[in-house]
Image (cartoon, rainbow, N blue to C red; front, side, top):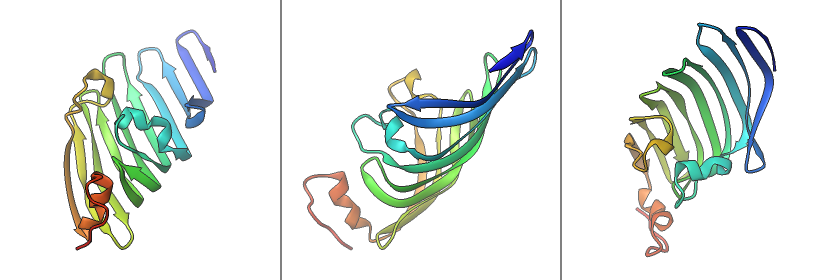
Length: 168
């Protein structure tokens, strides 16, 4: 971290959570201008932040991401992209998921989202929410538009313990 009056610069900043590095980045602030943060992660364990996604369901996998945040005191934007491999999202296993993240202080959206599990399903779609940070309210207000194809019944055992195996 370095700076002088009216300016702050940080480089090679790392953020850890649950003993895992979740962010590496740099940022710059000049008085009267937005604070700009550029960050990325490589092979970050999604399990390190899974409790922020949903405390009752498994979310895990190895993710690569990059994003840029530009914000002032009362507003901001975020834009970036992500890829997750060998993961679980809300208890459902997948081989790969990727998409683009964007939004701002009033909400976020994921576009060009693709997810798949070889031999079982592929899905494409988008998602949006009324806010970016989950701690604003317990109800996330998440809206998802996804289309899946494949042997979707094979996913049932991951969603309920009442089904051991399904196909079709």
